[in-house]
Length: 475
Image 1 (cartoon, rainbow, N blue to C red):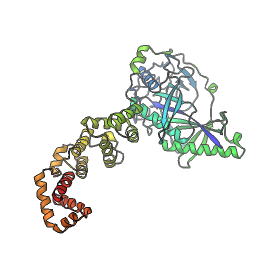
Image 2 (image 1 turned 45 degrees about the vertical axis):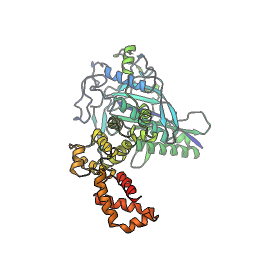
Image 3 (image 1 turned 90 degrees about the vertical axis):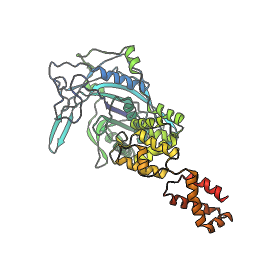
Image 4 (image 1 turned 180 degrees about the vertical axis):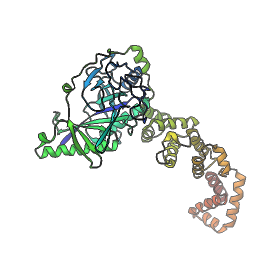
């Protein structure tokens, strides 16, 4: 039996307006090689100037991860050559990062949790992007110099499942903090996965392989599972030392397998040394005090929703999984409706009607209108069935008011005793035989009278009121 050892290096692009060491824009999707200048092109004589907003965002993340914020950190040159790294080195942090030791808690479906150590989070500038077209490769340097926070975990993860839980939690945290859009498709949130195995009970760390630049939870999980199986097979076949070497691998999504990409360098190979063009980064107590005042995080929001709105922990987990849905729910609850009803109408009714690709923040029906629909159910103005008709109508006509739609569609419930008794008396008079059966002990026939009354009222009668009045008439 083997134990899996996983460590993750997550690269999060910070959503600053300009790059880490120059004033070039960080906007995505521009014409290739237009957001560039002498500094991010690595031209001789161009000097870097640190973007202070990136430092502020690093402090926020460090606070969220309960990490030590180093008041003095150093920028280093990490030397290696790739076509998308114009200077031939990356400006990063090595010995002393801006964010030190911290932790992140992952939660399992059975209610248990596990703390995962965070080794560090350091600032660095991103490389550009290679675009391969057949036998030709192009280089787009718009991304070169974009500020990254590299968040390195301890090798505490023991399965693909734990790795995905960690990544999703971290993804959620950076979105809640508002420091990154964390768009995985655009590469704003990607990770390198370090995988090794060892016999159960062994404490030694064996050779790790790095799977590079993963930006899909689904493929990260598949890559880890494949790599673990590959290493186990090599061990069992007696070829572990030959087959499993320290290297960088890539995941072939079509073949569903990892493949060797290049040998993995050690720290010494990068020839780190302090960047002579940048002074040490000094963070003051005032900065820490100001930027450690962070928004409510997923775990805190989840706890508040459970305690304040009396919803189930599982429901709170679903709602707080994204900051947009959590904010939508919070806005709904300003209308003072039932938390249980709000959960159902948000997660089932509204989300079930959103067209594919439409996110909750772009919903045609906004929080206050969805809450008003629920309020009209709770005060017996409309039935649950009628409320669905109202929601359907508003999805196509979002500019209309809830009360106006109820009136327009004729969905208002009849709760007036006299009006309902008039209908009930006609139903009972037309079905004297069934009335006799009911009074003779056949109580199951009561549903027939309710159904006939609802039918006669064209669904507008208040069902609770109908039941109450029928029982009075039949007693």
